[in-house]
Length: 403
Image 1 (cartoon, rainbow, N blue to C red):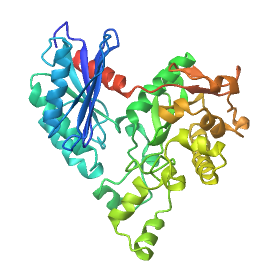
Image 2: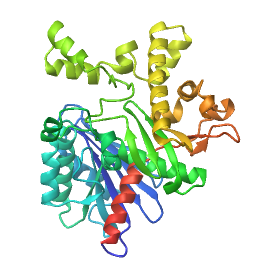
Image 3: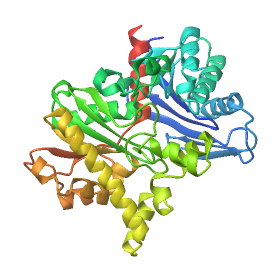
Image 4: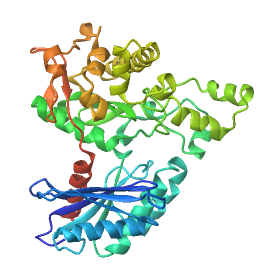
């Protein structure tokens, strides 16, 4: 890496999309952001936003594959003088969903790393193949540039065995790598550090319950900067009620559906991941729509909200017990950052644990980290906007700068 190189391109490759951001790590300025969606489909488009005052640009047409999509991204960046051939580009950081137990920290990508990410595909069949496509394409475009994988599961690898293990036959579990891995780790890492800063504390001395509430949702118990428990497990299906996922459910429900409803494994998988959660309960997975319907007296929306909040309370209580001492409960992601009624309802009745919100502070909308608990509260309640792209860029730049 040259002395002038301070930019990191962050790529998040999905099965039919690529999200990207270009950041300058010396100023922490975003230079460009964008999205290519519907790759390989009709109606594909690229939306590119230069952040130097330029107008948003859109390209439509065919992007046959990820290679075509990334070439188009490179062209858009070049049009702004930010091309992939720039000597100021230090590295490309890639979001990779599943690192198993193999990857506990950001890792410079080589053929051995690619082989291991591919070996983990059975644990994340919808995500790791797409992540690999993005990595391989980016390496073809810039084979000379350091490329770094940042893993969603890495933050949770500090969980003790008693939290990570399921009570399954040990030989079977080990043979098939069945354990709790956790997800959203990049967000939990960023938010837990930012929350400690908001409290004026050293992360190593801070105990937090972090609630990442978006369409996907997860909770984590963070002791001294390290995850000691998290709600998602072998897959992102376990845990909280989510937009379209059921979260925790009696495993025997699966056998019941297969035996009595004639469903096969694929149909049950589709039910639990895509047709359950909030959308399964009331037909909507947007919390704003659910709130609107509650105000209109919709009983199904109200019940869905109550089920969602009840599950949140159960995890709050469980993680309070796991940690023993809690400095703050932290809300983040789309619902956590913007849905004041969710935050209020989740903590209602928990005053005995030192948990409550100040109604006026809770109602404030802001993109800044902030406290919403009353002055002098025994346990702080915070809202901290997450920034997974910045976290990936930080981890990538720190790794390549140290080499």
